[in-house]
Length: 196
Length: 335
Image (cartoon, rainbow over all chains, first blue to last red; front, side):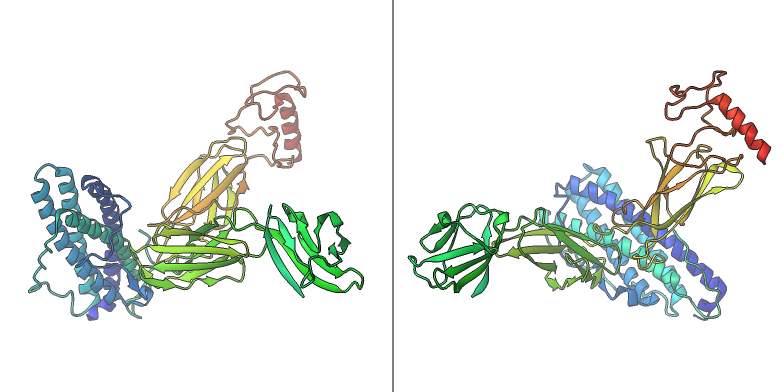
């Protein structure tokens, strides 16, 4: 987008990055509270760490500092879209499993799902600014069916989803700070990185 | 033939004089001093319940010819106890280091071997030249939920021991304390102190990985600290300082999102601006002789001449009101 080099685009981008960083921060602290609630309600061991859950986007990345702005946004967007689906599945399973018995957990899950959706939307906005192609569409990408798992496996899978989401929330804040550092074009006034 | 022999504290040691027969006539020396025959069993030297002081060079000479038949260096020590291992990242996201020590010395040489496993991958921890008991690792991946498992094995001639620590990428992050902490009075502001500091130089990228700070301050004469948490910036103005009191100030740092607080920085001292120039040197015990009307510690008025034994107010400082008036008047004369 030619507009990406304009001063107003640079300002908008800086603004989106700052807000995104704040969103990521809030999301992270809510996910951590949710994790505490989840572990307690599901009767899991708080120190359990679940290795590589299938279908969950992994936050771990090599050569992170070498990534370009668009690549960062694309990876983040793909992850949060996946989490949106995963959390919706978890919410559904939780309602089936516990019914109304655990409204608190349901509410907390729904609140985080909302934040994940909002963050995905925010990333789409940034991608429109960053890349002439804009964000990839979601049409035709059918949500993968949740694997058939026993109750305990489902609980562990849920734990893995939330642990990885907490990790992503930290990574996203870092990604957005890196993005904010990149100067959009030589014509624009270099802007200092805003601290959240 | 000279070699080294390692034995445990408290062990019984039997030394043979090389290939000499048991009934050969020999003389043993320890660090050049003849050993009494009572310690000999034939030509064997018997040392019972050895202690650290018995380390040294032991030599065996043939009786008549004084040929050196055998020599050994005895080193008395202990097998290693479980080592203490600590891993920390003060330069996130570059990597982390692990350092170790033994809780008690072994008195003999030890070798250390460290292994770092991340999931299925074995990583190499590069030994530092200084300090010796330390190695560092570069992160290959960031934002991983997979834990790191570090095992340190210490081995010496008398045994081995090991310890393992397991941690994830975020929990070991602990920056070094902030540097160049400076505290200055603010002119014409008797209750303010301006504090500034810098990010620790070991923190590689404060722009992308900003630090937040914790400031603590108190007047020297009180025990209780005031605390301020600052989410950004490397300066802060204290606005509630007690006038005329010397303050001690420290700052700590933490990554904005992960890890733990650093240790406290080096302490700095500062006293807020006061109206009258002080004629007495500002040392730890500042005598209250200024007539600064903004002082919160007003000494109780008394018409008595202060005697040495009198202690008023909070007991920490002897206050002499009348003497103060005299000195203040004196001070004014010299302005």
